[in-house]
Length: 352
Image (cartoon, rainbow, N blue to C red; front, side):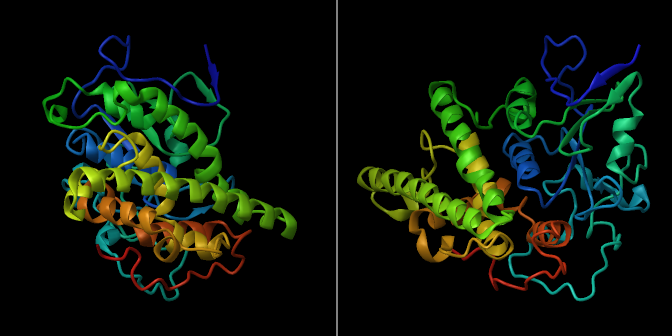
């Protein structure tokens, strides 16, 4: 009997009838440019799951019939241990200085540069993964992130909103995760979820409401509202900084605790980071969000951002500016018809 599905929202747990936590059983198919997939990258690293869950990196270009995500072709033997590294083996993950792309073709398929080869089935398009499942008629979009079960050859979950919390809790009994943080601590769970809900509408999605507006007055209205909401983030971080300053004194000590909740990294930091880290390099140009920049006009947000990027490997080592620029400037042609990729800024993230 065929089941019609529009989205996969299963979880992994010890009590689940099918999907139980096991090392090496699950696989992630992710983009290195998308802010929503980036949340999964960061959580995977924070929970020390890089050696537990392998990853395949899709090509940066969204293209073709039905806007499909493709994977690069190549010899899977060349992958070696790359799928079990923090960045999936993509070479440009360590670049902070903007690079020139020249006449880079959208069809470029260099392994470890444009994406990585799928070692499991040799698929060349993400759609093939969805079509592989028996007795399932999928009617949703062929999107990532995809959490795949190698044992049953089925998708566990493709909901970017749910996946970080699944990775946070599902593998808590494994040795690898024993000394990792809980990104949704129970004491602050209600506040974190309320803040995340607000941020999803007012920050994470709001940049698209500005940049993809079709009329000048709508663009201006959305832009003004977005910066009002961004001001609220700045005020929150300024208050946190002032409180920490009274408690710890020196900035080096303050930075050890400069997070949105409970003086520790939480899911809220992850969700905010993946938007803010793209702001100056991408959104100021691509989405015309140039009224203010993070580095010049938001002192405390900028400090919070640089602290995460430079002092926390799970954030910095999963941030790929080449892929994020190519994804936006080459794929969203309604905002950038010629597909030109701006060269700057010279430094994507300023040093602390």
